[in-house]
Amino acid sequence: MNHSKNATDSHNEDQTNTEPTDAYIALGSNVGDRERLLHEALLLIDRHPAIQVTRISGIYETDPVGYTDQPAFLNMTAALSTTLAPIELLHVLLEFEQQLGRTRDIRWGPRTIDLDLLLMADVQMDEEVLTLPHPRMMERAFVLVPLHEVLSSGHPLQEQVNQIAVRALKDGEEGIALWNTINWPGASAHSAN
Image 1: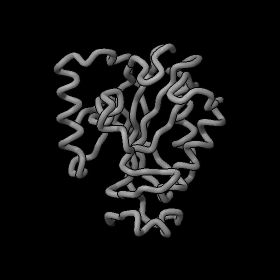
Image 2: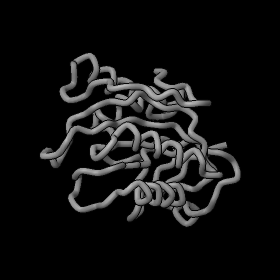
Image 3: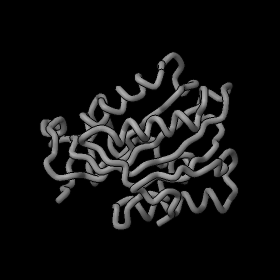
Image 4: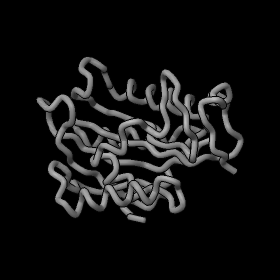
């Protein structure tokens, strides 16, 4: 059973859980073969012994945000089941970014792959290396549109995420277009709640 945590529980945030926990990540790429890199990232994540990819969104092509003088991104989200604690999962994701050629030269700049931990069950934490829920996700339609496809029913943020995502799609949010879907074994690819 998942219990809500806050920053006062941070001394336990680096300990592996015995029960699987739902986590949600955003994946993005705008350098190289973007779609292949997203697929490779999903494979790396799913092959980790403590992580299973359970659902994936469609892939959306989106305009860059922040540093705009760069190619368009392909973005998607994935739901995971993991026994890793939040900080452990973050470190695994950062390791996979590095394996796929990620460099951090320019903030919000071009990247082979970007793996962001958005949510982990109902964990709330604000640590130097990780804040959950992700502090800027509710401002980013390129995260919320694919997230609304995979976010579990009953998640505390589901209604808010869905409202913003549906509004962005209905209003024809500039710079977001469905690009493709990935057939993912064991996951309900591109299925909205």
